[in-house]
Image (cartoon, rainbow, N blue to C red; front, side, top):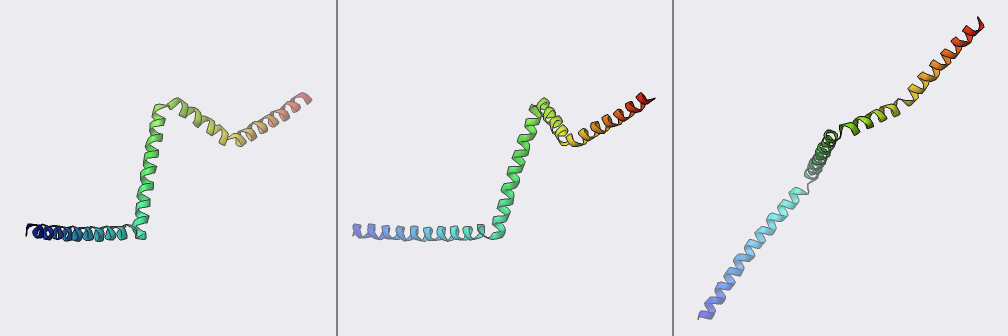
Length: 108
């Protein structure tokens, strides 16, 4: 009789475990369905992108704070690079204007 009671007890525990496992699977499926909705996927992607941008910005800001001289040098070089054509035109026109003035002075 003890063996029979043990078997019944084991079967009852297995039935309880099965029920709990089924409930867990149902919960997991519900959570997965919710997570895979397009609106939720888009929001998750936005959140991750925002986090990455913030981390990158913080890293860049810290780099600027740690290396102000290098940052100033790079900024000056970038400015000169961006303004190279206007500066070239300015100096070329200035030289041409001075050359014209010099030639008028020499004719007098």
